[in-house]
Length: 274
Image (cartoon, rainbow, N blue to C red):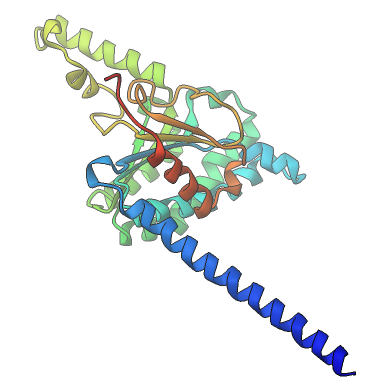
């Protein structure tokens, strides 16, 4: 009986020891995990994070849902990403919301995106964006913005215009190649009118003619769902961006995944051709 009790006592002592060791390791490693990011010199810290939010429909299919349920589920990680950027003092976040090619999707899916989900997001998130100092910009071919969404878009941009904590760029009705063509058309028009001397155009001047304007180029571009391509995402600005391709679907994104991606970014050496 004594040996049996001693055996039980040793078992529980060992169990408690393992739990305490695991807890201490978690605390210590998490602390270092946080410090590793915070100790990065200010001049090397990320200023602009771009994300290609891919895999909403595949996530829905894998769970037996309609495609638009995946889009609805994809709103949650957007909130996670906004909080992540503010926590890590990232000044610009660009999300690929809707490309020009996406107009080829089924009408039922487009109707849900434009009629239902957009209004739900505005109703539930606009006050949060305003209170948290998040400035929202919609970037894309504005002539193609659905008429029913234009008042909503203008309202969101107007109400968040003074945000100074984070600039959220939403690529909507957007294509990187089309953005460059549109910029060239503007330049050609001004040159023909004698407003602009084409021989004096620099990359910096050219960027002012883009839909996205002279925002800082994305330091890191993350794409979810496994595909390893940029799909017309900020074609001009991404010339020297670091790329990170994740296997998880966008609705599965967590703060931990984003943190790991950011730490890997800080381990890279960026030479910019030098």
